[in-house]
Image 1 (cartoon, rainbow, N blue to C red):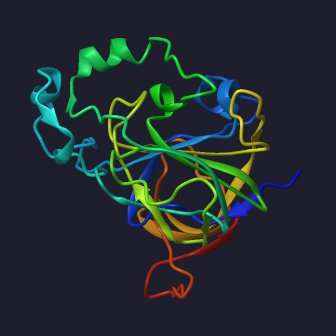
Image 2 (image 1 turned 90 degrees about the horizontal axis):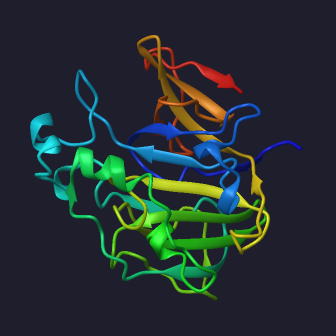
Image 3 (image 1 turned 30 degrees about the vertical axis):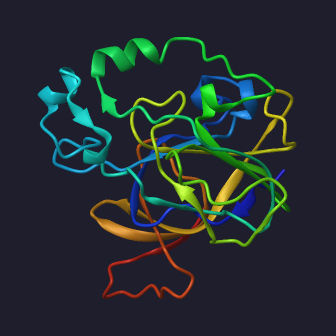
Amino acid sequence: MHPSSVAFPLRGEWTALQTPAERVPSHGTDFFGQRYAFDFARLQGKFPKHYSAPIHRHLLGRVHVEECYAWAQPVFAPFAGRVVAAGDGWPDRERLNFLGDLFRSTLSKNATVDDYRPLTGNYMMISGAPGVALLAHLRRGSVRLSAGETVAEGEQIGEVGNSGNSTTPHLHFQVMDRPNPFEAEGLQCSFQRYETFRDGIWSEVRDGIPGAFEQIRFLPDDSISTVSDKRVVQKL
């Protein structure tokens, strides 16, 4: 089955931390419909990291989420549809602690059919033509829509947070075949249009699937690729 094409749900530059790979489920599991899931974070610097603070403060647990490049960045609907579920009110993990978060990430998260938030944090699920999109780990208080409301492609639905099973601010994104993640199978999707940084240049990609640790950025529909821009159009 050919992957469904959806709009990239973020703006600016991002790094794909978790992506689908051939015959290997994303996140190492099919659980919770995650086979084709993505994690997107913002990394900067010569030795890329998530935050502006010195690394030693991460080891000591003194990096605040507000120092992270991805924190509170807007999140947008990847396609038009109807909100089938949404959850807010779950606290964000406000400080990053490398050793503590490493241990915490190995623990089982007790999400239930009545409350996904221990795993997803604050979230939204949108049902549309490509399937059911789950956007997770949103910032507490940022979820803009409730179940039953309609949403347009490109409409802001929340902000990147650090809620649920998250060790640094990032967006978890996946598409499923049904709105119950415990029963759902993941659906593969591609992104309609974005740019990727390869060999020192930004190249336009259409209907592409970013690879692990690939640096990408949003490309608006009215953007025009030119030679002077050092962009190369590619169809993946």
